[in-house]
Length: 344
Image (cartoon, rainbow, N blue to C red):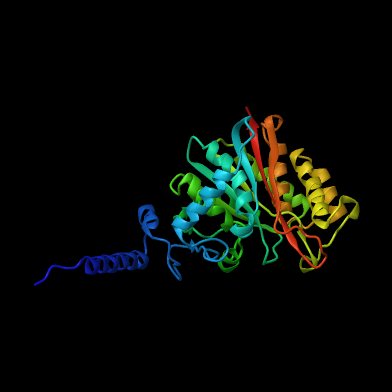
């Protein structure tokens, strides 16, 4: 009887691994070790409450090695010129497809790489809803968020604590998977921190009023002040063009793309000054469709209510546009990266 060929051996090993996966998925109980061993697959109708990485393969690469190379490249190109960071507290990051916003996002995440946490992080990710209309903030029902770089655990204890406050709804799984604003942050986090070194608290932020912004800000400020937390504010800035029903243009500012930049710059200045009143006045005056405006407002409330508010600083470190618009028939989306930190 001939010896088993290398090809046959590999095929047998693959079958055994597939059988092992099937057995795990069929079990009613689970352990953290088992969950981490489940590879990057779309686990439809499983018992693990997994939020699938549905935008992998379209908005960003589904191939782990390719994704790592891309993220590394962007991080290497990004500069971290702010040198007074004692503790990183929040990142403002865009959430478009990586081909458009990945290089800008890397400028924020560069600081997470440069100033790594000393302990396991709880990462609060606040992202706007693009596809469903809700008037509250929603917490996930899922236990695991899937990425091509490994599965990320939801901080179930913190989610439970927040839900018990009575201010949060629970998100619908289909709506949660359709929404991209939170998912787009996960590969950067997984790559920089490693999936075993942090948990996430994903919060879908609806079209909330000013009073609700304050309520959520007050509630989350207690977590914001903890040493083991980081807040990610997922937002793009101006969405310009007839497709977005927004075509503000001040010809005195130059070309259309220059007018857009000056418009966004006004918003960024108010955010850097932590001036929520002026930020809201700006939104009312210009109606700039900053999709994460409510997420930003919650962050500004957290900063204002922080015990360390006098030591807190926010700096925008990168700005870009998907297209330099010169014609009213064109369109673009603006991307900005910022960090909020305790000064050294």
